[in-house]
Image (cartoon, rainbow, N blue to C red):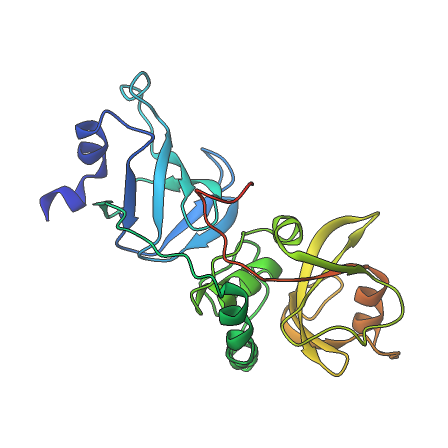
Length: 252
């Protein structure tokens, strides 16, 4: 247990290897850069990461953060050494389901119920939020799938690229199925995501400026609601999750 309190000693034992994976024993925050407190993601206990910086040539420098890559979604961010508790992780044999698409389809109702339950908690929009009750748009979607053992990428544009493309948006949403993902943005660049509930409605976590400052239900139907109208004007495309993300087999 003594090593848990000193991750640097663990990293030194492996010469700051970039090929060894570590398991988190606590929830932690992920930051945009080495110095500033700009949150980009929150990272659950038991997630797995590898070290990117420092390396064997740089470990004598003084530093309070390390750069890591997360296994489940390939995401790269900075984390604080202070409060970090880890253990070395060894991968066992993993079996890939040939029926992954059906497994995911069976989870859709539970995923939507989980999001509904989160929406009923007191919450607000949090850039980088994934732990709850406060989420950003992609953090809500990623965590909803993660909670049901379906890893997907972290950011909305990454999820858009990862999904099976359904169509670019026009006035019709009749071919959408519950659980399909909706992508929003400007000039084709995705910067927001929601999940289709059915009957023209979708859940998303939207911000203060144009949204509901938290998790809400909006519509694709003709509506006088200014928030629904705003997001409908930003719709780009729809996609469907048909597989789980894997760091070692998925092109990022």
